[in-house]
Length: 289
Image (tube, rainbow, N blue to C red):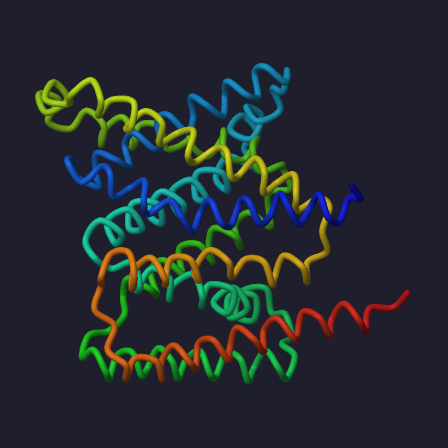
């Protein structure tokens, strides 16, 4: 199997895994999203550190020791923690479709952040895509009568996470280990808040909670493996697997309300996604040899 095919398999697995995780989070409605986030942070650190220890990799600890990288690591840890917590809350509170919208527009939020903060220049297609995405968000607001804050906060936190990580050139596993170590006090605080409730969990519920760390670390590991084998344009296409699965889970598995008029809003988002992918493809084709 050549490297491209292997990379595609890694990435399809990662994005499909992320798309299906709502089925896992829904199994833990017996406790609060706050508590689940505490388990996720704490045991993501445990499983990631275990893998890095087995591989003999100690470089991840330097991300917190080095003063230049410490702040970046802490900020990225806080950003992804907010994203994880809101995502768990959204899925377990009946907002899976809103979560899917957030991850559809996330690449376009990243483009906006690059424009504002990194002062990168946008291509014409990316401007048009951003316009369609903005129109889609406006239509969602008009049709539902509520500003889609869940979608936008998910997109913004993950967008800022990606932006912060541009300053950190470490691998995904090393970065995850350092980030979760940086926010471990937060994770332990959420985990042991009202500790008496921990005694109420059954022997079947404990493995579900602890495995949140494995559920977090595994797709990040395969994503990192695949990202090294694929061009950016391929990643741009494949990343929409996850929100598409989320969307269908919300509508067909969880029975969340989706009025037909909202198709206009999602149609704008899907057009924006298509234009964004085309812009990536053109960037690849026009790259000098």
